[in-house]
Image: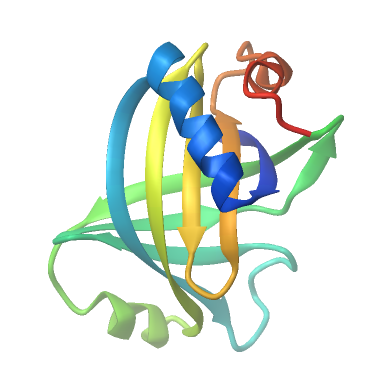
Length: 152
């Protein structure tokens, strides 16, 4: 599946304003704390600019492959394949096939649905706040959503 996204660095004040707009015009899909670990391979068998991510949300885990980014106008586009994974030695399995942890970070996120897109209000430990507008649907108008939210 192709993910299209736009990411904006925001302030605490921006987050409060955006939350107010979204509460009036969107549906809150989830509010969660995510622990993300990015894996890269030692032998560079993965193409440059691609990676594997393990995301933990409570007791739930997802394994995601992120393809190389391309730009289409203001949208960043990339192949994104995600599967749910259960208990088990996932990190050990990834190490066995040559992938090792590169970066781990925690993210508090609110995910909203509006106009065929998802809007995430994120606080990433050590990096700050972000707003992400994304869709997996070619017809979703990310610019219209960005305009609605008065983003850059």
